[in-house]
Amino acid sequence: MGIQLLLLVLALVTIALSADRFVMGAARTAELMRISPLLVGILVIGFGTGLPELMTATIASIHGNASLGIASVIGSTVVNSTLVLGTLGVLSAPKISSRVLKREGMSQLLAVVSFGLVVVLAPQRLFYGLLLVLLALLIGLTLVGARSGHESTQLEEEARKVEEGYSWGLAKSLIVMLVGLVIVLGSAELLVYSASNLASSLGVPKAAIGATLVALGTSLPELVTAIAAARRGHSDLVIGNIFGANLFNSTAVAGVAGIISPGIKIPMLSSEAVIMAMVSLVAILFLSSSRRLSKAEGWTLIVAYIFWIAYAAR
Image (tube, rainbow, N blue to C red; front, side):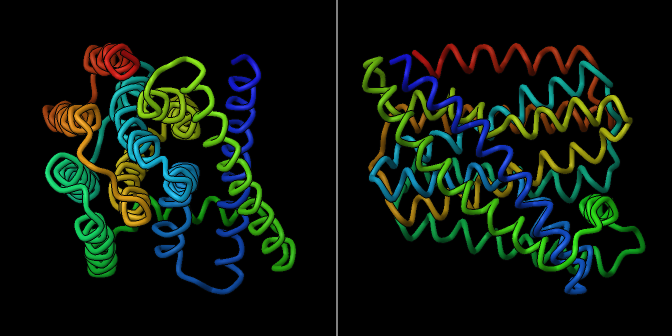
């Protein structure tokens, strides 16, 4: 069991670092190919942070571990809505613009609730495929809304910062991106392997490991980013990214995993999906109350995460 746990930690660290390199390389490559910062922000920065979840859930589904893959998606969304957002609230009590709340916030809530309904009511390929259709529609609305407005999106601003921070040429950018992707794939394979064996060693359902250890590990980049942003006063940007990560997890990651290996109705996953939707709604309500996440609300979300761990690991 000790070796499996060590392999799991190694896989989580490697997948986080390699995903970060992939995002940097892809953003710089897109800049050199003159792709708009808006598209870079949405497709590379926003969804690139969900690469660990995507690869982990996909590999798990390919190996027939649908419960582990879907549980990791549910768990990661809960981590973002409780631990990550709560930590941000405790450290900086961030304000949030109405634009981010209305657009990114409502979009991710729609995605999370839709994913939860699929898990609870109809875990079939058709309905998981509809999650991908929903993703395409939401991306389209984001692009149309951003182009018709005068303000740049949060993700577009972040894309510019990433692009300005690296002076790599096209060849180096492509190499960094491809090597990062290959390592992510290998790390995801190791992560699924070690998580499955660890679940067997402990005698617990794979879904429990997926919703707790795997979900926390794949969400560490968001947590680290939230802490760094709180210190630098960029909290609003990180909240937008949390929303983007939840949207991506609930549509792209869940959709791909479900299409590859749709699972039968599993009571544990159904109850976890309901909790996921509830905490996402509570997070939105907290942010909507005064356009600020207070420290008390932040601590409430962190406590909710502790209860989630106790429930999911039961």
